[in-house]
Amino acid sequence: MTPEQKLEELGYTLPPPVTPVGSYLPTVRTGDLLYTSGQVPILEGKLHQTGKLGADLGVDEGKAAARQCVLNALAALKAELGDLSRVRRIVKVVVFVASAPDFVEQPQVANGASDLLAEVFGEAGRHARSAVGVAALPLDAPVEVELIAEVG
Image (tube, rainbow, N blue to C red; front, side, top):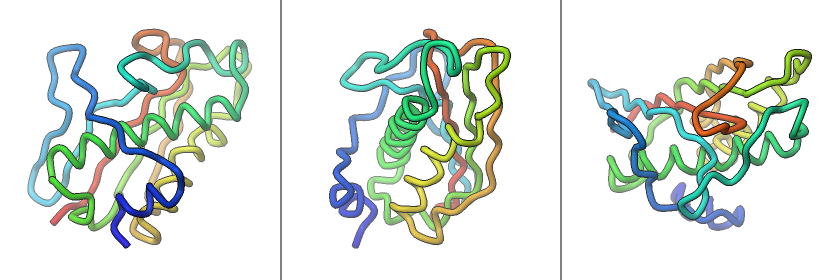
């Protein structure tokens, strides 16, 4: 089963790649590594959620935002590679979580991203990760996700 078929089986539709909103590239490849720029939870051309975890949004909403970020990152990978089957392994995921000062559940929010990658790619989707709480993210996004993938 291809990663695209697995996404469909899980009930997800891979969106079109998000157009950069600044002076950067959606992906950069060096050798066998493909880096994505940070992806926020844009859905159907607009930011799906805004606000801070622990003030405006709960952990489950943050997990959903992280999943949408991963779908956008996968769309960027597919646009570069043509086929997600060329992903050999997800190497590293960085999840930024816009957080209220006393919010400490960034790892649980980041699990929304990590769990989806493991479901789609199996063992090759298990990765190293950082979950970082920040004061604010672009466009008042609650979550931003970056991926590093080994590709063939």
